[in-house]
Image (cartoon, rainbow, N blue to C red; front, side):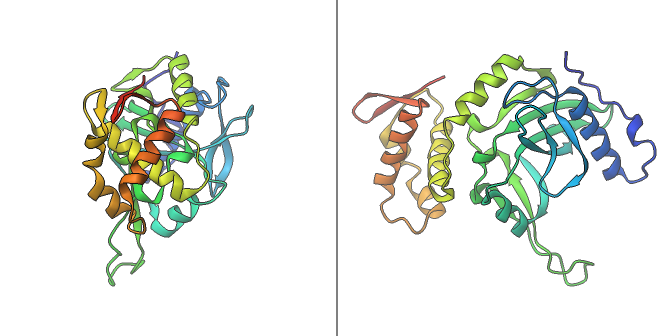
Amino acid sequence: MMELLMDTTPAEKYRSNSQKARVITEQWVADNMFCPRCGSPRISHFENNKPVADFFCPVCDNQFELKSKNGASLEKVTDGAYSTMINRITSLDNPDFFFMSYSKADWSVRNFFFVPKHFFTPGIIEKRRPLSENARRAGWVGCNILLESIPATGRIPIIEHGQAIDEKEVLKKVAIAESLVVADINARGWLLDVLSCVDRIESRAFTLSEVYGFENELSAKHPANHNVRPKIRQQLQLLRDRGLIEFTRRGEYRKNG
């Protein structure tokens, strides 16, 4: 049974609030989290701060990084240097991510999501303004991770609104998300951007014309492509091949799941 209240005793020796939050949240993951990749009942914390990850699975050896914030919202999460993040997500050793929102009032987990590494594209990384010339790190540019820009298929809830999701349901959703693995970063961006557009259509049944309604937005995200509508049709075909949607008749589709 997953415990939603976090143990604060590991942080008693720290003074910094950010250090306390890091220690408390990481200890909770080490004590409670299973591997969403292979189902191993526990994942392990790296003994030393590893540059690319916080945890690893001792069974399948997959690596994970934790991002946490106080408060209920997980639409936007602050991260480190923009250039570092872009380099990481376009590399071959990028870890999967856990995102946690918690209540500092009682140190309880409110939301906890798993996002597979292949859902990260430059389009979900927002560049922050450079620090002012009077700042200690003048000119430094940080970033935000825009979770709301990740398709729902890639935002897999493990705890949602203070309620734990059945582990079998989590593993099932991870398996579905795995069908969207695309190695090439540009091709990945197109596929996930079109899927995000489909997600934003409220009804389960939708038309090609409705997806064309996002043409200007997709064109702005992919300015090098001057044939956006054919590209949209291609991505819908790929989503059908991967089982995310199905064709019902000419120009009409239905979301699966």
